[in-house]
Image (cartoon, rainbow, N blue to C red):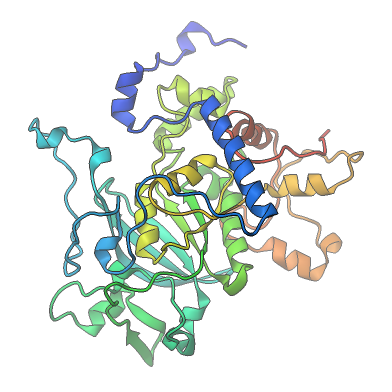
Length: 419
């Protein structure tokens, strides 16, 4: 049904004005489709031949891992003194020539301010809180690396843990063991009778020899906290933690970026939801508000990964989004493997008989009698309000198909049809 005149949103600003406000312009639908096709071919070729060399990263190579100044983006910037965790101030709004420099030209610097152990349904993880000089937000890194909790493994010279170099650095002369332990710069685990501060990292510090499993996840209050069925964000966060927990060594990283609503913020996302209720899809609603279909940026994410030790081995990226693969390579982070994230409902539908139609119902988890005791244990626990269950709704189905058909996400539509 067409919108009446009094319900039409204001016309989007001119392209130049929109670009000036939101930074890099999001790829068009055709560009996203082309990128999706290209990456499909690339990763298919790698799977068919172990000797196929990885494609060269776009942009400057990643800097050598080591001292805290290497946790910046782009590479090649002057070293930064590790003694002070104070980041450079964001540009002022004055009319001077220096203030006219676009934000994209800034050197992105990150500082891990604190770290702590969090017990989860998938095992213990370390939560890292980061500050940066770009957007003033507290982005998070969730690190699964249980070998760090074992003193013998931590003492092994061949073992390179996933640790923040800016956190472990000496922040000032005369720094006490209590200061280091309080912010999370400790080894093994803390208890009432054990507290060992971490040594100051070498310069350069060793990089990770392996390519850890990494998910770059954007905050979604509605999907993760309320269990909204307009999106699959809650399921994706839980699935990422689950996949890491079941990977070799249970080693991996989830970057939790404060980029609600694909970068437009919660307020604009709520407005976009109203437009979706009037018949628009998620892309059309963003554009009708004068926003890009995806305004997220990943310079801070790349700097966080470098701070956590990611080096030339790169990362195994958990994503269906070709834009994230390109963004990481542009920032100098190699992506030798993309690991798809197939919605759980679609996985079940592809496994089902083509002649068996699956009912479309409210959020549900599998029947414990059908899965068996071990299967039920694996499915019922999890992160976010969605947890390890399977969610289904007409709105979620439309959202997933829009991501594939309009945004170029690399997913095959399910074979089984619904009633």
